[in-house]
Length: 501
Image: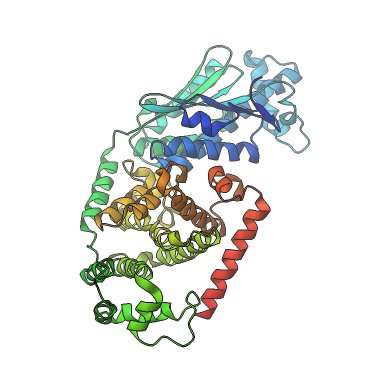
């Protein structure tokens, strides 16, 4: 068999990144679901979806894939179980007798059936194919689904599209002995509510294989609810306050080589909050001074126009958020840690010229998420009703029911509206898909991504095994020990800096 075998996991072609970049077909093949299989699935799915800028679908699709994979493994185990029992699965009497003890015997701690699947050459293949208008993901196992099993699955798919919400599904008695149970039903309800048609999912057999297909179009035909949400997001984008005029004025002065220190200082003094922040920055550990800085003129000399501009952007965004998005200040405060990490990473790789941009881009990378989460509690509650997910209000899953608007893309649109430079805009736009950033902004996008990942690991939303390999290679962090060592250095520096304030 072609490909690279590692713990009975086959990747074909072995270099999935190159295959995806070239638009080639690619598959993962295995007999059992394992942490290694899940790692590969997450990485491949991420790479495929980012080409469409539909990364917001990743968690949902991963849930669907895992459900379908588990069903396929279960189906393979069933065939092996019947074979070992000497039962003909196609005979009704044998089928009934076998199913009486199938679950109890196969999934008990003493059972060896699952471990025997590789030797029996019973496998599952997850096949990715890029078509002109959509991405097709097929989950294939090398046994044929029985006609009665196929009828049951097709009936459940049809029912899922008739349900108003997940509570309807609970009202039905769902027998998941054949697989395709409530997990798949819930996924299909989500498909429906983001505007994906019933033909998005299908399951067929050619007499030898069972093939479940998911077709993900580049753009969905939105349902009524999705349209309302998209309209709300676009309206929110229109209503975002402009950048404070006094901040813009100081930025103009800093950008004018003929401006004097006194002119810049006088303009800063008109804003008490900015004055306090500037003096605090000038006296921080980042600037070595013999004596305490007590005047704005001295602070301007010490910090320089680049440092002042960084402070201006942070202050301006803070004012906008305080005026409109105060309830999301936890996300904003978390962004300060990401920004600190990004600046330190830039300095660590001796790229001090980039450090200010890295700080600002990391600080602003979640601003799109804040706007998405601000579309209104009534819509959040409606989503909870649709999905049955009570944790929805605390997450960014809301992106799954927008019309292709990822929070990173939205964040870049906001920064364009505020007329930020291209480096900031691109770093924010590509902070979840850094290797797709334009070449001249890639080092900045990689730095912001890595700082974001460190924060996500601390929040238990990520782990080393699924970090973008291109970024790890760029920073020479492929070794987990080196990765964790850098993370510890940054975390310790942040805590020391916070304690000194």
